[in-house]
Length: 322
Image (cartoon, rainbow, N blue to C red; front, side):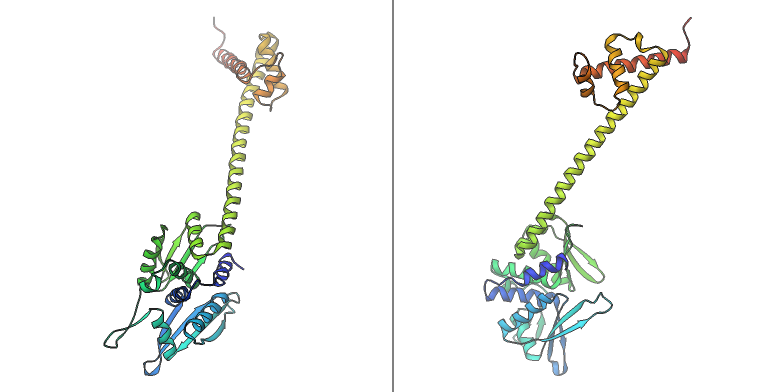
């Protein structure tokens, strides 16, 4: 199963704190995942679809517990979509209208006119616990989260622009940096930052998913730090090797065109050691000298050898002065 499916399974197992929380969660699910249709004689039909079995069971349970109605459950099998199933729950007539009115989605005017609310019903989310339940329902109906091993990305896909704008305003009240974009006729709200996704998972009550994501973040940070150290060490090693190569080339030129025996004893000693131990560091080279010399002292002597080699080259290229 995917990280997203596991997260939904966890959320669908959370027992709401009270009846008002059940209602808030169901209102979000129906608002995002529901479709309202008209049958003959103006009778309504409410259909809620989900590809997540745990979410479908949750909706069926909430219909029964809140409104004492039993939805008609149909399983649609998609052989062309990797064998995935879509679970469809349907309510007809008075039962559909009863649920829609109870969720604050269907409104009747004093004149008997019926309207569909395309924003979040304020009376449904008046309490803090209900607001958390509403976000949980929104994720169950239209949310998904990417595998944090690959990327940090959580999104809600909504079919109605007005409700998408309402949910965007609702989520930003939790200091979430939610972005919005249109995609294939749908309205997508998304988060791309790990800290923000952790906040939202905590808000919904997905504590297992949160812990797993945090563990992955820690592991990724450790790997990144190790890679930085390795890269730094590799860069330093390369600098050491490059410097050693230049030093050896200079010493070999001195040996071939001037003679190491003609060097002052201090320079001659370090020159011979560098030729014999080309890959050791300056500190290691200094420890081989008699008496031992610090890193800066070795560097000073090698720099003098490089300057001498450069002077010999210039003299050779310009010819002997008359």
